[in-house]
Image 1 (cartoon, one colour):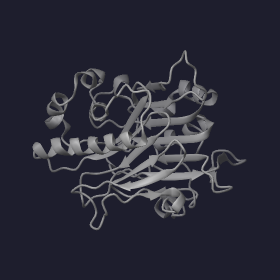
Image 2 (cartoon, rainbow, N blue to C red):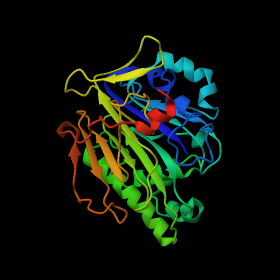
Image 3 (cartoon, rainbow, N blue to C red):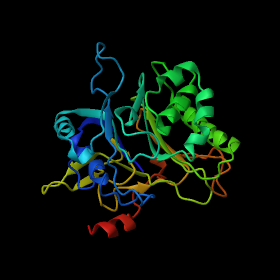
Image 4 (cartoon, rainbow, N blue to C red):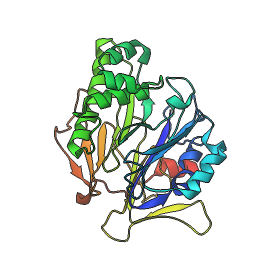
Length: 331
């Protein structure tokens, strides 16, 4: 199963601070993943990708993200190390892949992009080959033609694009991206129901237009836990003097940095909060963070439709102990 990390900050971050330097960076998680559901494949060695947006808009370059991918293991790619030391961005997607559907190829490496949008996935759509044809038949021509690879993740992105009023728009509202994500999950579940599939799908999706970020921790089951997803925020994310150990610091009430990751990048108890199963997290352009229950037949008992919690009201409080991760790490 894949691992990913998302960074959104008021100031650009050097990519190495997310990808290569932290002791439990996304690259180190590729071979030392503590929170994977699937223990049969302990390595994420089937390629990697990193996508980012320019710090300053350049009309000639355009608003679309830049994406670098490779089929080599992330921990053994010197070009990634070199690029990470020289590139800064205020919004970064990083992904390491363990293939569940689709071959090992550059076309199947996340993140995927279309226009301003960037998308990645951790998980897998259950019995994908049984619903693949119907998914494809339900797509408009532009979304079908967009797909270059053969992974379930990119086809899920095509479904997402088909749910937007205009996938080529120059701007997207928070509500439009939120609703398209909910519609994508509902559509995939609908195809599975029609095919009589009972095995749950893991759909930790994330999408951004460079301003808003929408991410989900989701499984099509009311009994099982989704793949792990964590949240952290603060004013600085910095490395200690010894190197490799990072800390998210909070100097005041402002949120200068917001991070979402399959696994925490630090082992500090106060830095990270676990996102609940079957929940959507939204980071708005103004750095407000919303945690929204995904309401469907797999919702936990007592979940209230339309309930929405804002970070500034204290719901997303990263003061939750990382006991299982800390205990296994020895830190």
